[in-house]
Image (cartoon, rainbow, N blue to C red; front, side):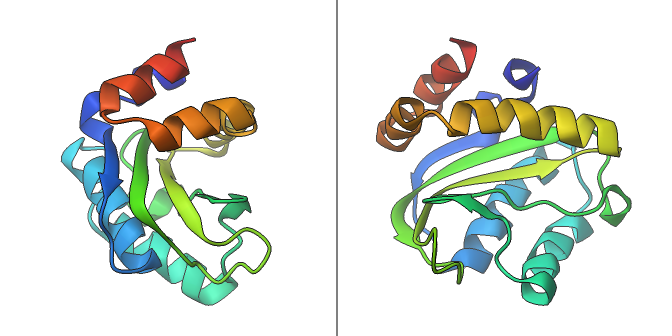
Length: 146
């Protein structure tokens, strides 16, 4: 399923961001351009971190921002950013973050399916290294196809 959700339009590599909020905003903008979310979903992802904390930093160097479906999700969507310079999200155990995967889903079931597939790939240290080293979105897509 990930293969159909991650496209060249929803992947950007080695981008510059000013901080964690900017990273989430840029990842969210890719989902908005893909018509997966309404713009308010981006604010909901940021507000979630402000209210609950940096729980979205799931592994060393990897953050997975998301919000509730009713916050403006239109369909399932995933964007992936690799950051030129890693940024801190405030998670002492897993900062700094260099891969940001924004996720939106229309219901709990598709959310869990997407999360499960992502965790399989992002739990593979070799694939994570290759994602970080990718020079373009096509290289990232190839990793998800294998």
